[in-house]
Image (cartoon, rainbow, N blue to C red; front, side, top):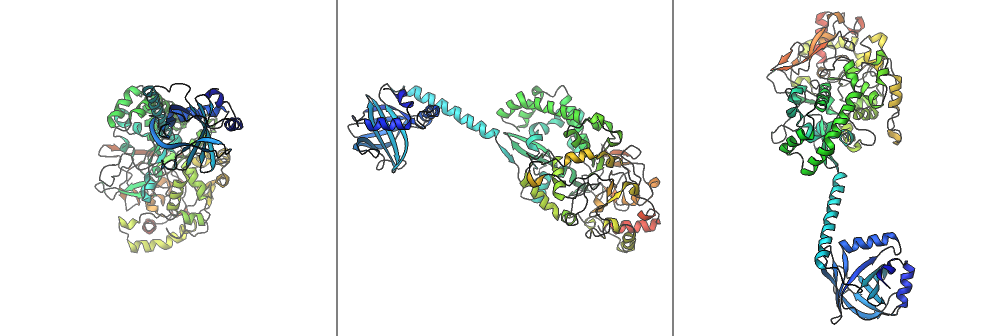
Length: 637
């Protein structure tokens, strides 16, 4: 009988053979060991091999001393001593050779082995833990053990392969976002989960402006992105609105909520910017960022040969990641971005967004695989301003109609829908981190106007009753009191008469598809999206920071909004964060500052109309003095 025959036997057959055999002679010398788990199955052979390579290779007996030591670890070290003697078996009470660890080993003190000689030089053993039967094993003296050098060499090589395999498995299953204790830092830089499927390699994103300066003179700051300093006074590596997460061993970055909802304001050109969380991102040009990425990946120099040396010089990736980017990552990024650019070709069919605006309806149509070339002409432009997002608890309590066109009444759905825009889909969204943002926004407050500028209290007092008469029923009694007969309700387009392009861009088909989002995720499934036929009357908290005004950002200041459309500026500039406290809005007649050009906004283009919200009931027929008084009162919001 040979060891291979024992490996084919079932547990019952092994027990019967053991009970039929005599104890035999005490073994002497080194015997090769084989663990027998799941006897008789293919798995038994695999586990025997695995155990032999990485843990137990056999036993070395000293019959004269009545002792043995096990050969263990991949290096076949002589460890774990046992006493050897004959005694009754716990299996059948007949004489057996006992391998007793109770007095010789702290590690294996509860283990008792029993062996019997089932063939010349071949021993079958049973392992007991206390009185509990564990597994069988074989000790064979029928052949010479493999030479120690090759045994150890093979074991070491196998261990190295296993360690590398485990390392790669851990690396490829990594999913760790950078966390921030401060809630405002979490809002500005924390992950929503979008990096998991939509993230761009951090090492590539950070070098693109240096590799392709001709596509973006001035770097990301020229797109109005806001850079802050860290606690050590050094500029952060990523601007506000970009999060970072390690996924599959590679740091990935993508936009988060702050890309649309953190802005800056300066009192003068010489003032330091005041960063305000929750206000519209008044300087950020998201469309410009998209066009820059597309220009880079379409450049014939977007290759591993060009990018990897720059990544190595920057020291942002180890050798493994550089190889992964060389052979897979860079080509994959190029292909996916080119595909995305083809889907987002609608950007070439509508006026440029400029800073502080984006088309928020055509991107989901593209992601839902709508045939964009078959859209009706009237639904091709969905441009709108980034909104502010303070005081969500009050909006939630009042069941207000949300978004510019009031197409949803659920704050939670609105938040998950916004997260969808940051790449966070139902399988990838980081619910815990998004919930932390939601909780913060429930009671987040705008920056008071008086922290930067004074208010003429006498003039504001004159404006208060005028505001109550002309504005309060639609927009609330104040910036903290949202009560009013029509607050949070949709005013029909026939009455408000503002630019209707965005309203028509939101179709019933898109609405139906949005209500399929999160299907299969229980209570998270969307169900509140509705097609409306006008624009919602929003509360005016932090109104002074929400310029330019109207849903498409076509009116630069509050004072301009109180004038009739023909008196409002037809052309102005967007993207400047220096404030005009007199007219209440950002300065809009400056074309550039220190070489940085601002965006020329033409209200005559489709989707950019500055008309509507005018007439006697909207206060545009009041005297200049009365309008100035209302504007002064609105500074208190």
